[in-house]
Image (cartoon, rainbow, N blue to C red):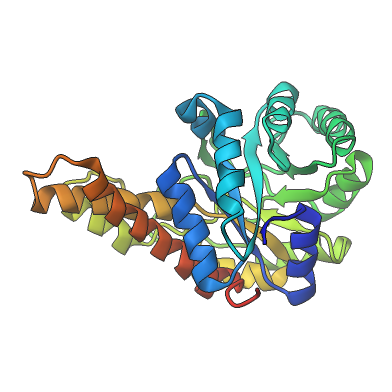
Length: 308
């Protein structure tokens, strides 16, 4: 099946009441982890590239072409999205590099500027049959190189208005999640009633949750037991994210947990086998850990397993 049009994949998720998992990748190993997980779980998936990954791979067009060729080997559907483009130009570059969907993050802009720039991107993208995700509201924490100190929750009526003014195909909303976690003693509260109100303003529309990795303390502990010094930050629980899916979220971004287990496996292997220097030996278990975590999210959080 391989790559499909984003609208086709979203329509299936909306009709069957589950969410699409969007997983950031930055290498052959991480791309294979997501695609193999999707195949194993018979689930669709969104293969994402962030601005940080763009810098890491150096040649975005070459990396996207690799993703395209890999996807052709699988029987479940994917599409490729560039996550969190901070400017109009970055979106255009991602489109020219071959991404099927771009996410413009204008959440830090005044409302009118966010509308104006999102509309410009939508007009450019739709002429090329490219899907556009926008964002309204602000999540605390880091996203690539941008830091937001406070959350600004999304107003349901403003969300409906924003969609009408811009023509964006999907909209990321702020209802309680965070980018990379924040300091706290327990999981963050997720405002499910607000999620329901946003979804009720435009039934059947694909609303999106960013920053929806849950940072379970046991994953941080496992990493730190292998010599890591990862701070115990908190985010929304997997149970609350799963409830948000039922409340109307149809795309969920979740990568920090995947990165945690990947790093843990590398540390564990090198601690246990210090004489091994062949990267293929320790990157394989890391890839497998990444894959298992993605499979877990598809089964327990997204409800996307068994859909294809």
